[in-house]
Amino acid sequence: MNMDRLITLFRIPCPTSSATWAQVWFELRSSGLRVLTFGLGMAVLIYFLFAMGVPYIPFRPFAIIAVTGGVPATVLIFARNAFGIRRKQKRAYISAFEATQPCGTAQLAGVKLLVRMACVLVAMVAVGGSAWASSSLMKAWGPWSANDTKNTSQTLLQTRSALEKDLFGTEGYEFALQVVNTLLFVIIVVAALAAFSALFARYSRRLLVSGSLLSLWLLALRIGRDFLPQAIYSAMPWIVVAALLFATGYFLWSGFKERALTTGYVCGAVVIAVANAVACLPGSFSSILGTVLLPLLPCVLAPWALHRVRHT
Amino acid sequence: MGQTVVEVNDLSRSFGDETALDGVSFRATAGQVYGLVGANGAGKTTLLKHLLGLLSATSGSVRVFGLDPVTDPVGVLSRVGYLSEEHELPEWMRVDELMRYTQAQRPTWDAAYARELLETFGLDPARKIKELSRGMRAQTGLISAVAHRPELLILDEPSSGLDAVVRRDILDAIVRAVADDGRTVIFSSHLLDEVERMSDHVTLIHQGRVTLSGVLDEVRGAYRRSRVRFAEHFDKPPVLENALLMEGGGRTWSVVHSGPLEQFRQSVTARGGEVVESRDATLEEIFLARAGRSRQQQEAA
Image 1 (cartoon, rainbow over the protein chains, first blue to last red):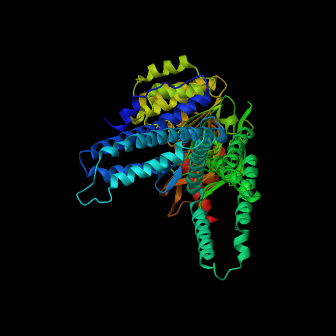
Image 2 (spheres, each protein chain N blue to C red):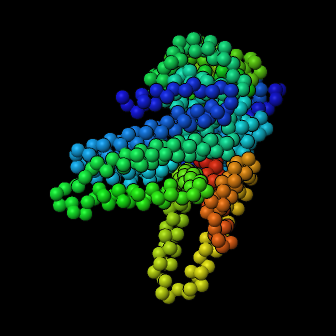
């Protein structure tokens, strides 16, 4: 059974009562179900590897790799390109079918990002839950070889216990904060990767030049630690905050001017930004600004970038 | 004259060093069918993409229903039906899913009309788009473009992939029905007989410029093809008033020309020749002549 047939099993008819729900259905069917199917597949694979690790030792390293790489892979692979940008003959574009639907760019971007975030989160929960449940099977693993004096399985179980204490040994409020932080992390990653892919599609050369200049600047800061004035390093948080503030301001202004942004969309982005600041509990004024601007910038940039690709 | 639906003024667009559109102006009014003709790469699709807001102008302006399609895509696209040249539809969708999705996006969707067209084309609603032939995809795309009864229907090379029967019987009927309803159709084609059959207005685009535009009957009435014979032998085409294209050699030449026949006859007589035969020029002859003239002007410039 191939991936396509598996997805077809989840056939849900397209709702016709609302354009927004129809778009949600479209996003789910075109890419969302693929993410969910991968997440579930990964969850099953992790359990399988741990279970096979009981009688067959060669499976054990693969089980550990699957756990340590599974969650980051779910986020990084499936959080990217939420706007569905295609490439053909060195040309990047979004399909004319989607671009010619009577839907505002902010609404289109919002639906695409939300559906992708939801799917990535569900996939992450499935992979993480499976990793947690499956790793309890390590109790039955025993030593990895005759020379396994350190008892690898025991060491791994101890790590698991420590993680368990960190995650579930916290108070209800702290645990809720961790959940919110994870949620916000996924939102920021999905929005940032979507914005980046759209920007890269439209301004690949400029983006490469900017990236190179930024790398050179960071390298200069690293190398010049001994001879550059300390004031530069002290001012770094403010320089970063000023850059974030300037960029966010510009994209807000330009987004509203080109009607790529709507008040509703920006209000949603501001709520996410404030939630991030509350969840991070920053100390200084610059870090408060930073935690507000860090999620706000990609959330504002994403529809702006989509607008530039939709209307080349 | 009907209400202005599309107004393009001095539109230019470049892709890198290549100029795709160069100072194009175009106007379309309600209840008319407009045919855009030109060779591949002439700029027809680029112009249509500007009307849809898929491309933004380097200079000049585009207004559809008085709105800018780039800054107000919802206002424009909710009143437009579009069939792309590549019949670009999501391959994973089934035909019925495409219909339902389009219905949700378009409040004016006419489900009975969509069903009728599906039956006319003999399309199976349960089939996936990726399983359809090129012609079937074109038919599916056409249904989703017309079934919400758009005020403006934009068809980019609609006949590509359609067989002759569907083209002549169904496409023509759909386009005519849309225009008779007081709505507007703009389509691009490189098939001159199709443009001649379907359009009220014709616009020739050549190398990014509009070289000819007008009401079809007026355009046809304004050009003639005449056979002329000279007493003298000419190695190169002789200079004749209003002549756009001259073919032949020696004493006998075939000339596509504009203006009244009498005026042309006088011009030929002045060069020591006579008009042996004259008839209305076909659209193809006119377009070949105009495209050639445009090229000569560019070379001279």
